Amino acid sequence: MEVKIINIDDKQYPKQLKTIQNPPLKLYVIGNEKILEDNGIAIIGSRCYTEYGKTYALKFSKELAKQGLCIISGMALGIDTFAHEGALSVGGKTIAVLGSGFKFIYPEENKDLFYKIINSGGVVISEYEPNTMPNSKNFPTRNRIVSGLSNGVLVIEAFYRSGTSITANLAEKQGKKVFCIPSNLDRKNGVGTNNLIKEGASLVTCSNDILQGLNLEKIEDNMEREIVIPEEYKIIYEAIENEATNINVICKKLKTDISQINASLMLMELEGYIKSLPGNYYEKVI
Image 1 (cartoon, one colour):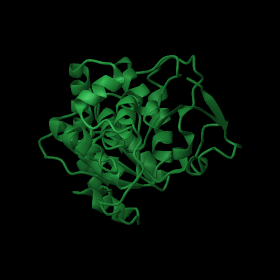
Image 2 (cartoon, helix red, strand yellow):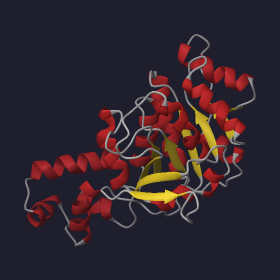
Image 3 (cartoon, rainbow, N blue to C red):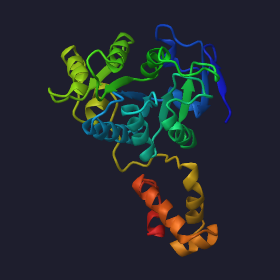
Image 4 (tube, rainbow, N blue to C red):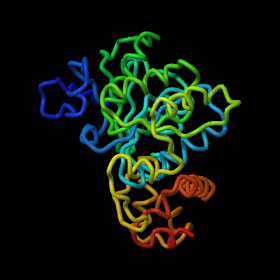
């Protein structure tokens, strides 16, 4: 994969990032760098997540991606992962900011997610040279980029004095709007978010609260928008576009077993890549 280098004086360098204190002098980029200028919401939270946190990370990332916001996070395990996956599942755009170089994708468990983001029209960036190994000191530093690229930051779950809480406070210093979903008082994962709310962060209960907080208009759900199809599904869509009217015709065109096609169609349905497409693609494969 081609690694592009964007220097701070280049036209392609994100304007929002130039305004923060200590912006990175260069960015290493793989993927669609054009979306670095899009309106975006950073979604951050604990690696040690609860089911409550997972549910709402997915819910908010999906809904905000459908509204055209780019979902920005750090590709860490936990809430970061669900933020990226939620956006991808509805054909949305997402940016991952790494705390290491591209030769050392971290965490290793998210290598598949790394490639999925790139192949789905998203972008992965790092301020570190490709041969930079993961280092715990790099991750708090990279978080200034996560918040710096965004219009605002949504905190899903955070422990008391956690890295997530520190990032939220950093975002506030950058002049970003900070949003938090409330948490039960007896959850350690929610102490940080509840404290941020007490300190002035906006309590939100739905995605529209965030859109209003960022002064963005809600897009009607039935409006057409561009859907980015993952590479692994494109061959099936091409068969459908070429008038493959049922699954047997698709199998014949692709010269593959019906069980493999069925498995792919099931994944496509679960991930929202059939009904969300314009035209009558859905009816053709049912």
